[in-house]
Structures are given as C-alpha cells and as structure tokens.
Image (cartoon, rainbow, N blue to C red; front, side, top):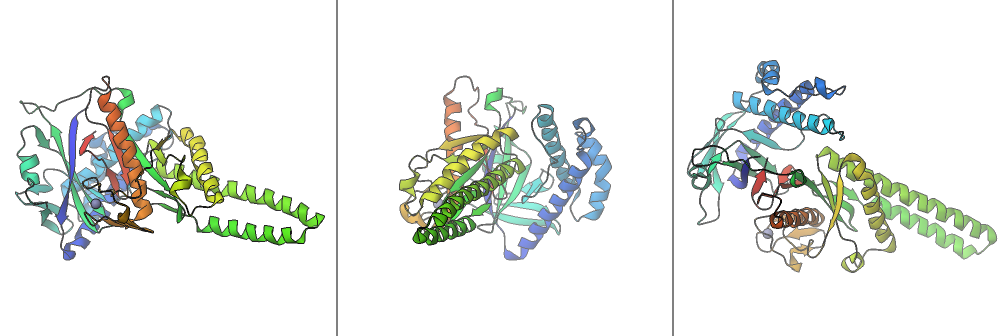
Length: 415
Ligand SMILES: [Zn+2]
C-alpha cells in the first residue's frame, strides 16, 4: 500500500465559472456511469471488465465525441469506473454483497495534465477549456505549490475537485504520494484488520428522526403525527370506560405497536441501504445511555424509536457486510464539524441551525452532528491503530462519507 496524503484547498471561484464546473462534473459523472455500465456484469464477476485499457479502447472515442471533456478527463472518468468495478469484484469474490458502481456525487478527477499548479493558483481543464482559479489560503500558510509540488518527500498524484453544496464552495483535494530518495513510491504493509474503512455517521433527534453524514434526512413528522393520532384515539376510548371500549383499547394498543415497529423497520432498512449505496463499512450511532438528558424535548416514544432503530440496524447491517458502532456523544451537537476547525461552544447551535462562532460554517445542526459522530469514530479508530504495535502504519485508513464525497480528519489517506 502506498502512503498518500490528501488536503482540501478551497478555490476562489467567481460566480460566472460555477456553471462551467457544474457542467464539467455532470459530464465526468456521465462518462464514469457509462463506463460502469460497460464494465459491470450482474451474471458473474468473471464477466466484469477490470482492465483499464480494455475499457478505454471500447469507450474512449464515443465518450470523447459525446462530451466536451478533454482527453485526460474522459480517461480519468473511465479509470474511476474501472477502479470501482475492480473493488466490487473483490467484494463479490469474498462473498460480500455488491452492486454495479453508480456515481452520484460531485467529484472530478484531475491528473497532472488536466490540472497545472502555479504558485498561487491552479489551472483546470473544464468543458469550456482551461480556467485558472486562485487558492483561498489562511495568511502565512504555505501555498499548495510550495507544500506539495516542491516537496521532495511527496509527489503530486491525481487529485479531485469537490463541491460543498451546503456552503456553495469548491475544494481541490490535493493528493500526494510519499516517495523515497530515488523517487520510488514508499510502500507500507497493512494487515487486514487495518483495512480501509468508510464510515456513515447517524444523528438521532426530535426534529429529524435520523440524519446521515451523507446529508440524507429521515423526518420525524410522520412518526410524530401518527403517535399523536393514536394518543387521541386512546384518550377518547378511556373516557367511555365501558368493557367494549376497554377491548377496543387493547386492540388499538396492538395496532399501534405493530405500526411503530413497521415504521422503524422501514427507516432502519433505509439507513442500511444508504450505507451500502455509499460503500460504507461501518454505521456509527451515538451511545444512547444518556440520551434522555441530552434531548429533554424527546418523549417516551422518541426514546423507544431511537433504541429500536439502533437495535434493528445492528440486526440488519451485518447481513450486508456492514458493522455498527457507537461513540461517546459528548458535544457532538456543539462542535464545528469542519475538520480544520473543530471549535466547540454551546452557542454554535441555535435550534435546527448550526453556525460556528469561530469559522462561520453554517449548516443544519443535525447534519453537523451526524458528521461529528462519524468523525469521532474515525479519530477513535485512528488513535487505536496508532497505539497498536501490529498496525505497522501511522496513517489510519478511515474515511467519512459526507455529502458529495469523503472526508478524512487528519489529512492522510491510504489507498
Ligand atoms: Zn468552525
């Protein structure tokens, strides 16, 4: 395994270039999905195409014709699909559940020929030709050019451009590879149990029953509405006080329990599906022990729903090869989930809105919580890997699945 390092650098993108980048991302995704269609075969992994040159020979001319992408972007899109199909075939061979890779997130892969670094800016190939963007950097920090391109220890590799929908900002994720004095890639040994993990964080709450770090919400409105309806009916029957009303009350109780279970089963299934769709290995919840104290507005039926939801997910996820973990929930709602910030303060949160008092990051509070839950698991795991003499690696291979891509908190990524 190579040692890779990635760092997100924010780009200054004037409004008039937003459409160019969005269109480039759309066409890139189109090429990747076309390549995935070509390479994947549901009947047997033996029929899947995992050779990049074979896929390129079959697809390149057509995709180059159909899109406004330059040659390198088309090739990177094909390569991305082949790589994903190859991972899928690996899972399939091991008997794990797998599907045709589908590319839905906003992400464009640039290689050395489609992205050129200058001291303070970068030039990127887009559907409208080359466009230059400046980096938005904190004062006194080294420019990406100084840090990565001039570094002797690291070599610039393909990088991805990503878009953060919540803040309407573009980030160039610079990826570099560690090299030795001769310029050869440094290889490290990683045992199976330190294998790359991708994490889905889930925040439970009253406004939304559950929110995933991918930005998917499960509203609690329908659940609350029906619980309320059942309560009204129960109150009516209790007032009558007859034997018939008593029997009806028992039947109503049965129906309500069945309905609640069914509802939570559906949400649990959808959470597991969300993890599988984003190729996550772990679903992480907050530890529920003190949830009553943390959520003073939650009713008994919310408590019931949270506990059942975790229980059902714990039951269903392993069938899909997905693990379930819990982390200490302290301050996950007050902490800024931007990995370069992490500022924690109770005034960061105002009802459903989170706004970091330090860096100004504004986002839905439950989504912020879901990211923090996933990040906390990642840090915990990073720490235990580092302190384990067997791991052989200081680089914890854990990513967090977030809206539009992945995030890793320590700036390191192993591929
Ligand atoms: Zn912040």
